[in-house]
Image (tube, rainbow, N blue to C red; front, top):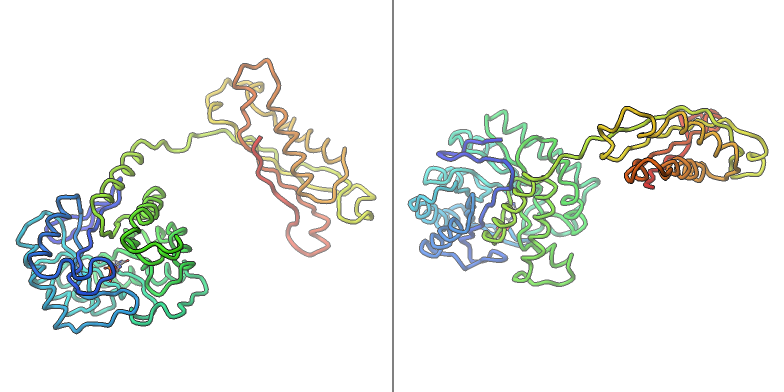
Length: 410
Ligand code: HH2
């Protein structure tokens, strides 16, 4: 996917893009006070570009938990000379302005910034500015505001709520003709559990069909996760979380303080992705709706007579058997599966349907080990699923189906 961004194009391909963070603030939680002033800021921007930044994100207001807001005048006074200074360097990378104020974004875009990064989710006024400048926007989710956001944040379903919120922002952007990238806002009005829940389920944001931005760099959830790790020792944790998201292909932009290390991460992930083979195709042999009878149930009365059951078996053949000879000997025989399921059911007495399902799985998997068919023959079943339903019990309970299902690996 390509997104036009001023004279640049944001290209999302094999690897995540690396967005280098440049805070020209006195109080940012990691680099506060390090790059204030045009000279220090441009030096750092040049360094990040040399280290492989694909984008540079300049912010002039800290949004760390507890931070107090700054006025637009103060923000502009810090920001504009730096934006102009970096734009003059012509580093060849898009410059983003990290602000929640439309008037600040407007002025920054007029002075050389190419996209907006809005931690407050890009409301209508911000989208209007973006539309006027034909600039893309990153819309981040935040519950509350930085000063108070970490006081008991609450969600019923953090992943669904944030996905739905970001979906609205993408739709609002569409109304303005603005490309909106989405960011779940790690650490912005979220407990450690909320952050982990989001990071582990980023795939849900893929439904929005727009690039996903992630800002975990050195954040305090790593401190809580790792049991007390100061900010200058959070690089490994940051790389692990970003590596997880990159490996699962659920992130497109990594917003980070450590550009060199993340460019290496992104390049390595890209190379692995290019070499990754799609899961090998495989044969699946099915025997569904096998009528069986069994003495089964938790009470002795239930077990006193044979009950009707229905058994479904799905056998996944090992990929090596794709293209195997067109010969029953080279696969699993569904007639044999049905026969085994019936024999196991009638031959035993069980309290639980799970146990019966397991015994059927073991019996079917046992057909793997017949000798005399070459070395690979004994491995031809890779996994199987057995489902046992009790239609009588379902009728009594007035439900569609009761039973149990197990997945089994020989
Ligand atoms: N995090 C911070 C600031 N801006 N933007 C996006 N899109 N996503 C983030 O996660 C995000 C962000 C906070 O980090 P930092 O800028 O390093 O600190 P501070 O707010 O203290 O300046």
